[in-house]
Image 1 (cartoon, helix red, strand yellow):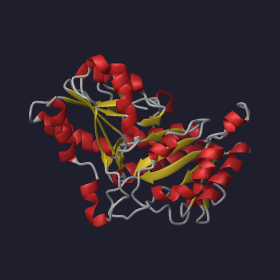
Image 2 (cartoon, helix red, strand yellow; image 1 turned 180 degrees about the horizontal axis):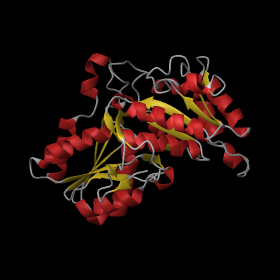
Image 3 (tube, helix red, strand yellow; image 1 turned 90 degrees about the vertical axis):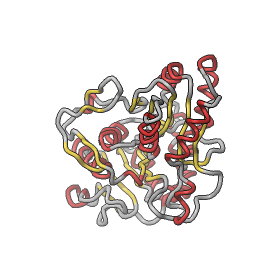
Length: 341
């Protein structure tokens, strides 16, 4: 993709400024162009172009045998994708909203995740399951959830999430070319945020799909975030700088496998770690990250690993969702508590 500077931020040679949603659209288009076995399927992905317009224009250019409007049946979408993958296709399935994935949960964890092992490595399922996730758009339950831990917990699945347009463009293509099944979480409230993307970049030079990126270098504490919370963490680091605190921000990007080497190196340097994610805290990604960091960086820690997460309740009504979601104040409060030890 793009050459990286020392802090790990993309340095585009030549690009254009587009939204994260449009970057995904371009990435899907490029994948369709480069491999005739790639097919896109899901509810309203064709004529409507997806509820968030991520697949807009693809039906017109590639036809309804490659961009397929499916019935409202998530189990049927994933079950069909399993059959297509066995026959050599590379299905890209869109789950319209995060909370809609649960009717397909059995297919994903009992079939998609297990087939390679069940067949002793003879059958691969190169399926990408796209899931817009998280809150912040004024929606209700089943439209604003963060189910990533269910899938990261499942052996046989790889789980990734992008946080900016440049990563969205590269990562969706990398996921589609992978021979492993990948659950691809898209931060829906960041769909309209813009960034520079090199649409002519060669994927052979892209930042590795399952590597974490240091998006802001620092020396005093490490903020670990992914998906929609990366922007929140960066904003917190900027605010903390006004008080003289130099925070390092790591975008995990891959939730399974996790790039622990990058995390450990950062925490050993800063001595403090705070994990930020929208999902409820109970047995979430933050708990695993805290346990691993404590195990491997114990003698480097100046304070316990802290978590800033959603609350352990069903997703609330839209009028109070801002009280549920981790925000700048909650992250900065955790930073203060970390320095108070």
